[in-house]
Image 1: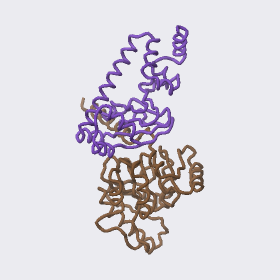
Image 2: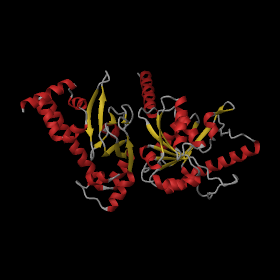
Image 3: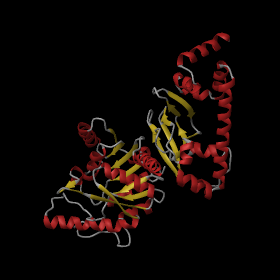
Image 4: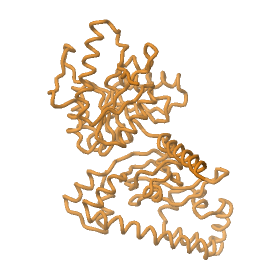
Length: 193
Length: 242
């Protein structure tokens, strides 16, 4: 239930047995089935979710009901509406499960307590947010400056596991393309080889 | 203009209120002991709300019969029959222990890990076999004992002063029955308040978890009065105030 979590954290910071016990006491284990919502737009996001097992996505819903995927999350990743979590304003993202999931939720209260109680948690969460910021910068740079083929190839090289587990129309949505355009891009890449 | 300012403030307050109380995201509620009198009554009454109900019982046939029955009245209800307490509690955001006080200890051992940080509702009244006294010491309550067993859960006392029949008839003699809530976590109590409203009762946050001692004793009194004056198990509490 906690294996991936502790393994992931210990790649970046070292935890004593006592640290592990404190951390564990603050986590909320939660199962979520495929297609179920973890968060719906308009609700205040009261947690950050760590993925022990499964795949989720966060997205915004356009006026015509079209979905724009912001982020995927697989084992070892965090997912949340960080803006809503930190400000307690209504969420602008919706988060749901693409596969059956096993999650560990860190509630707002738990997050605040852990920041005070456990310096290694603060270090870890800072590293997480820093790398999320860098990833976001890279995503933005790629969206505004790279040709489509390079963007798709960059994505598949960086996240091969996501490409395998997520349907193509969601990859298209993540890239801001229609499924038809994505299909043309992929064809172009294959013929070029 | 101060007048417009006031109107805006009101609009913002209303908007805020809506966000606070009406959640879009469905919460999952495990009802442990769903085929019992109280469990089934709670399941039926919450089926009209925006909840996913995980009905846990030992008898799969009885669970399926209950689900089918609820579906008849609420075709859109999101129900799942589960025969494992730990599985039901793992998926749940809120766990309702709708079992007798004496059975709680055994269940707690099965769900302790997956109940971590979750709201656990204690509905039990620790009555003795002759229904004329409580088996807990006056210095504690069933709810506090549950909290000791689940130190990392948010135990909330609720639905202990309402009989199973009250859920079908929450308005008795023209008055909506009150239902009291006690706990140590403000957010958890607000969430439970929503459940109590959905069930049709008037929720009253009574105090911290130790207030459960009074709430449990109140139900002992109501049971004894019910037996003495034959209330036929349809009775409740109503605080009169101006």
